[in-house]
Length: 625
Image 1 (cartoon, helix red, strand yellow):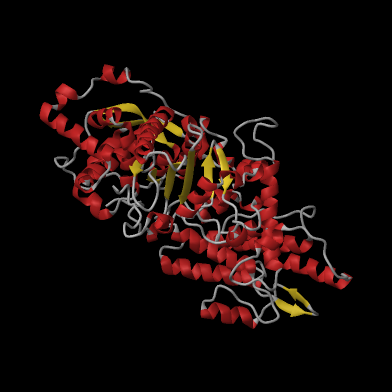
Image 2 (spheres, helix red, strand yellow):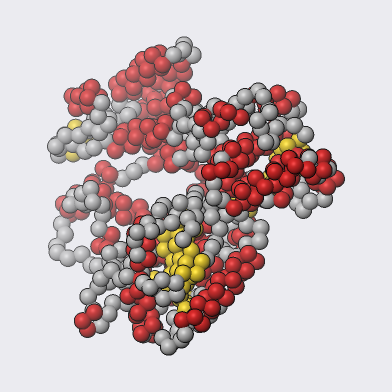
């Protein structure tokens, strides 16, 4: 079997064990024709070959203009002694999870093409279709017993049930065992409309989503690259990946030198042309911070308008990506990359004047000036809140929003489970027992008012106040905080806000004198001491008359800060969740090294914009060589 993008399983294992060795970000699929055992083997192989050709024609027809993130949909005929003849494929989808679900959509549609066709699909997580439907699965199905039990047939989802009699014990099925059940008694397989609806929920947007997932953007690039992209538009995917995963060593030889003699696409003879990306590819290249190489810097400085500069900057990133891709031409097995190498050889042999298109030729290309709206990149926290409340942005009946009753219910269920886990004294590092949470039962035993009071009090201790957390984060970073009025909070809250505001003013006044890291460290310590003195951070829980009160001096805080611990508690006190969460969140944001990440996204939703950490950029993707 030919390796596809590093997704080939260990060749020393049998086909039944392929799923256990599947690398990350790969999806694997099997297509079997389950017919009468007496059918001639050669005839079955012939039918499988016809099925393979028709499947590839179908995928090319549906995905004519689609750009795969990594590997394309592929099938090969396999005939070995361990399994009946079948079609097999492995696709690496990289950072685009949508490619995996598009693969499932293709396989589901193919399963309708023949009444004897049974399709199995899995990824590195195992039965990911069952993971999607985890909330509605029968109790006998678990991650330990679901192996090879999921099949697609006639556009439906079927599950191989437990056996009967001597085979009634649940166990991990091999691929050959599952095929034996399908061949012997296909009518015993379980089909549930509810499970199928949950598993196929992400497929509802297809095939319309195929076109909407593409993004066209006008960029300014060398004419030579414009011709290559016109001839091989799908080459944009490996080029963006090469740029996205670049390092200083790979950039230095040809992108960081003033000389252009070693460049395949020197910055000259520029043209502005529309390039087709997927949304994932476009966001990857747009989000990259990249200092212009010397050969490009003078052109960027001459652009008269921000729009023209933006187009040239995007073209610079894309061109450098192609330079990196072609530079590694002898180390790749990608067909489209090798085709780009052949095109460059033809240009070199016949001359650019004889091959490269003129301005009028470029204007005649399809969608040569198409520029799609980029508003889908913007995230508004107010719109997010509206969506989570089940209200679409444009009002009732508006398409394009994800907020609905189902989303709202799922989020509430998630929060409820999290709070239940926090309140569960028996829960440990192994996590929450979700099975118990899914079953609604009446409580047993006689409850007392004291128990209800304690439960309510515990809920208050572990509940997460989003507004208070956002306010605390702004206070710690020296951002201005609005003082609450009497109608918005209590007098104590007003005092805390005023104290934090005064501290913020003190920080802003002192910040102008900070010139190095030592001054910043001293200022941070001074600011933290003032906040602690006024009780703004509420760091120290101390027991008083059986209740945990915050805001007073305690030796616990001093010892914890001196030892560098991020959590501080005693046998009778509670862990300061807000302080530890804030500190860990800031450390997580710093670890993003200027890139997009969960910490930055969470803070952005709260309206908090942190400055980039310019001094600790170690990732080659953040700076140029």
